[in-house]
Length: 155
Image 1 (tube, rainbow, N blue to C red):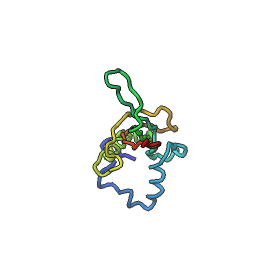
Image 2 (image 1 turned 180 degrees about the vertical axis):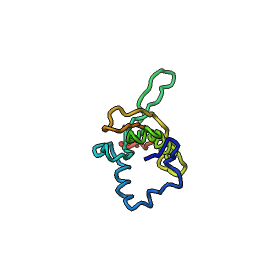
Image 3 (image 1 turned 120 degrees about the horizontal axis):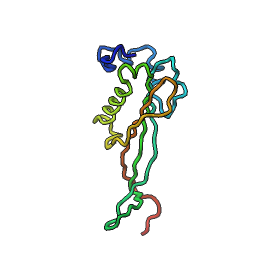
Image 4 (image 1 turned 90 degrees about the horizontal axis):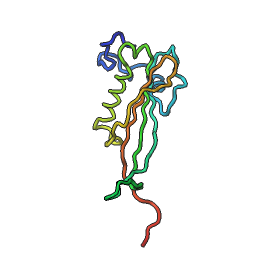
């Protein structure tokens, strides 16, 4: 929990989660694959980042000389969703959801993550229905990928 609004959660003087004896449990509660809020309890006062795959859209191409888009199966856009849930008491003190969102952006846009090389932010929005005592914010990212055509080949 932050002490005050100037209490930087990423301060290098704070204990690193890797050094805590219960780190595996903390990580399992805080980083979750899927949209899972079922065990966010008011008294726990934790933050959670849920990560999951969003929709995948077939690409569209503009028809030359015509104001019309047609499907182009040679590329598609994949969306990834990150839901941030923060206990109200932490968010009230230092806007913790914003800190987590900024750090998420920093990590996803760093050069070290090859899987997300051309990722772009699609949207960011408050989550309207959150567990009691929590605030939520959703970040949606996307990237476009080329696809090799499959199926019948005429000779």
